[in-house]
Length: 553
Ligand code: ATP
Ligand code: MG
Figure (cartoon, protein in one colour):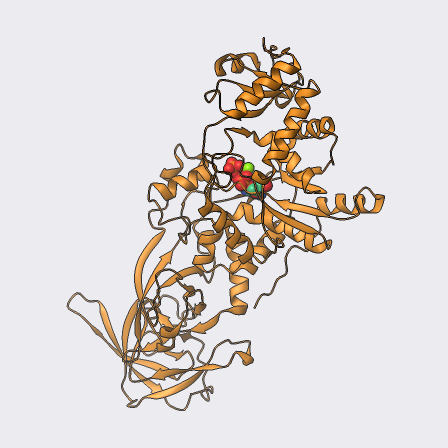
């Protein structure tokens, strides 16, 4: 069940689209999400996915999933598969087949030749060093390459030889002939094609020249008829270059619109860093439940609807976009509060003996307090229970505000009787190891007469409880901006994973992978989809019931 729909809030991009539709500049909306398959998707990508697919849905248009696989060196099919899985899981549909930039390699090659013939591109044979030097700086114009005025014929011949594999990597590149003194560095004769004797995950060994991202991206959008090409702000300075290519090639012009990328506190989002965390075993893998990846969040138990509602809530703008991690966690809580069934489990057990109760009862307990239609489950009650150690204090501080157990105090056992602590037992170290309580047997499903009992605690029957492994996850980083630390690895939270177990009510044994429950008064827990077996669930703490980090600050 999901409580939220993909993007619905207004934003500046919708305003632009509305104007384009009203003026007749566009008669439909086609967007795209163009990941490079060199890593798993993270929450920043989710923002872009929700935005692009959300707009397509809202305007009755289409959003392509296009893999920008122009760099053969870092790309792998594993990433392609994970990206498809993640986009579908987030609830979006890219139509029949995903698209690949590599499908356009022939077309792009043809266009490169077209620009050579127009005198708008040339083969440069300077060393990489000379090229760097001649590029100039932000304050200094660049210098023309000595090869800049090669004839069209010579350029065509050299480019053909580059393509045929006659030259080693790095010996020549194809450059656009624009302006070496442009204040925009991207326009100083940018590279279009480079020689790379590398195997490509889809085209195999067909090519030994590959288009540069900047020569490929805008034309890919054009081929697909993308009406609004939405990207992050760092591409703003590339827009004049994309427009130049489109104009010189005389092809359909998509409109690029830039927005601020999402930054999340206590998180790193650079793929290079995420890859390092995986490769150097700081985490278990890309889908480690502490990772900001879509697959990690899924495994942790974040519902897709919560991620969509987060992306909607944070909005889309053009100024730096720092969002506190608690906003995402709140979205997860809100969604799970609606959808997760309630269960009882004790993580930090203290034994309770009910001295006046000598039977076993199967109590009916609602699955969800606000949703009668969710039904009930059977909760076994007996004379020996586990409660949470934190729910008893020998010497409670303030009489008024303390509603849990203490000597001579009463609480209600959730879904069961009211009990009173008559006595308690200590071990040789002075630690309380058992409570002796009596139950008011007239309080099942009703309040006692003449007094009010405010506290409610969770519990499980000792003889019926099942012991299940629990992973208590916390934030992966304990500094607000890990990228600010000298080395972001030093900001890793050493307590981001604590492996323990819970004593849980027996119905939890049947919990299925991916199912999430609220362990009442403890938090939300999801059955790990990788490590659980039939009747042997392993639980991941998805999120606490309240924000515990806000208090620390
Ligand atoms: P890189 O290109 O350095 O490998 P990237 O994060 O840009 O990393 P891509 O696969 O190119 O990764 O990203 C696909 C799309 O996701 C791009 O359109 C990009 O704008 C968008 N995107 C990536 N990171 C964020 C972010 N933090 N916030 C919003 N959108 C993002
Ligand atoms: Mg990118």
